Image 1 (cartoon, rainbow, N blue to C red):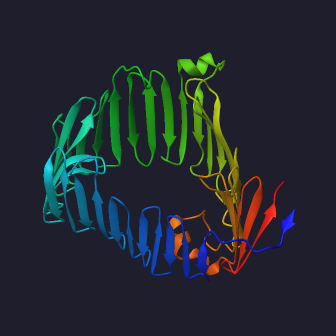
Image 2 (image 1 turned 90 degrees about the horizontal axis):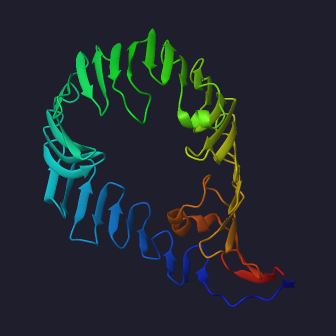
Image 3 (image 1 turned 90 degrees about the vertical axis):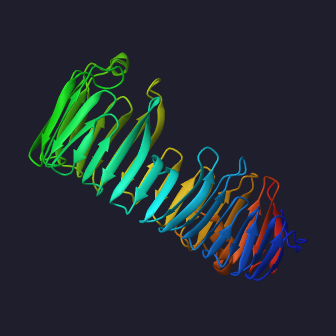
Length: 370
């Protein structure tokens, strides 16, 4: 049933420039606020309850659960306070200490790359690494060391790895283990030939990484009724790849076609599947179809770029709009600060009715969905 009467506005709006509703305010493009997040001349400045950033270069983060915080001016300065280690700071590349950066803990540097020291976890232990003139000279607390690219030794949990004139000559020895491919060895004389020979894995590489053939054996794979091994073929990479394994079935003829199925390690049940054409121009998933950048359709969203997009929000309402000039799905900050300038029509639907808004709320009406 169609109703032509204008609705009482739950949102106060003046063109694309001003908009106000519950937990939402925008004076575009100067300032916008939504549920605790404030933008000023976005992307120049954004702040939240616990953080703020300026031009994605100056950043501040506080940690409400303790007294910790972090401030940085990328890439030259950082300082903060960590609950466990206390205050820290650094002026890159002169000197600094950081309690946790990327995968490194207790990172120290001085006149980088002249000297660097950090720790990384391995099981219940910590491995400490020192380097001088990174990446040329390094040594580690477990005895591993490197004089790159001439010679280096790396000890892992159940294997030892070495290289000579990296990456030309590399080799490794593997001890008996429970989780991977068992005892054996591997070596490679790049770019000519390489080989892996282990209890449950055999691999041959010709002109690596372009041509390779690998086969592995595992009990779960056999228990699913497979008489042969798991295999992976690249001939040549990246143009042709085929894999049939415990976790994945994949065929890729790049950039024309790819099909892939991901299965659960324990149960073998299908978790996800995808077919691709033209590399990633056309992607068909279990619950979504994409034709980049023109079309995307899934369980809770649809996009026909640059004309139309719809998406189900967290409250169960379906929201749609015309136009949709950004070629990817809704970005909240873009929606708050800029999208309204090219959005001439919007709608908000529930099972009972749909509210429509044309020309930034100048014309509003409601239609029944029953």
